[in-house]
Length: 184
Image (cartoon, rainbow, N blue to C red):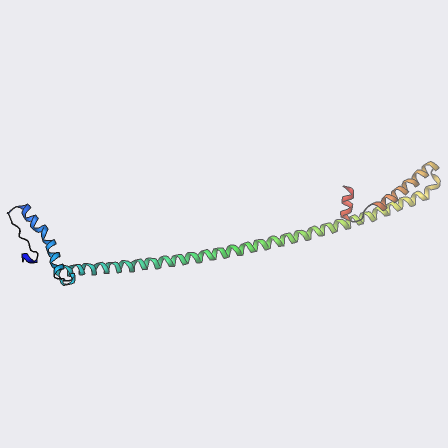
């Protein structure tokens, strides 16, 4: 046995002696297994190790399946949140399009109202101009009737004023916009 690597130890009935012998035993068993070229699977320790390894693999598989379940739940939650986000974005785009369309309609209506008001103002100015011309012609006709009663200086002054007013009327621009610009 000594030839195969066994060692002799003396037991002295003390705690230290016992520990020295016990500590050297695992080294001897390991070298014994190595020297016999036996695999770890053929020993009693290997059976325990295999049992522990099997339990660890089962625990790992169980933990992996739990993690897969949690991961699947989180993926479902993420997809739900993405769908909610897409719906919210679509709703926001829809509201923006409607608001933009409403604004365009209001602008179009305001432009039409402005055009209508300008046309009404232009018609009003034309009507006023026609009324003014009629009154002017009535006054001129009345003055021409009374021409014989007015003194010569006043009549010349009056004729010159009528000519000036008629020339001024020809220079006055037409249309409401032009009339407003002319007045300003």
